[in-house]
Length: 113
Image (cartoon, rainbow, N blue to C red; front, side, top):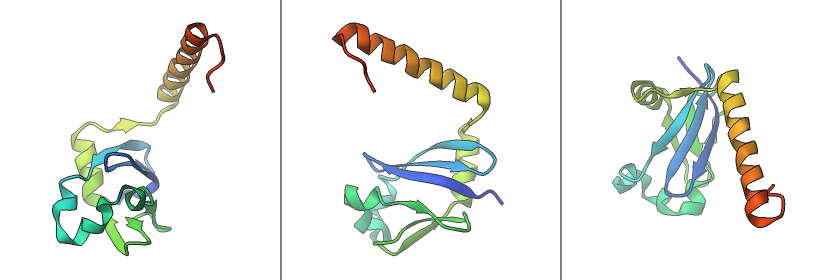
């Protein structure tokens, strides 16, 4: 069983998650929020309080008292070709961030942090 090691609720009711094997990705929860059990998470501030449980088998929203098992989310992410957080990916991302910083500096005349 794969465990979630990090998660973050994002605007638009998306949840970013990283699993213990390096697979990471986003899930859109808008359709799920139509179910009565999850309606309290329609509040964007509450949705963004998502956390990985200590054991890594659930994502939970403490203030709403909602827990969601991550196994099915992992399977969905794998089926969609989830990104593996590898060193090559990290280097590629760092280079892209540096290029963007340089572009912003040229465009605005001041550093972007």
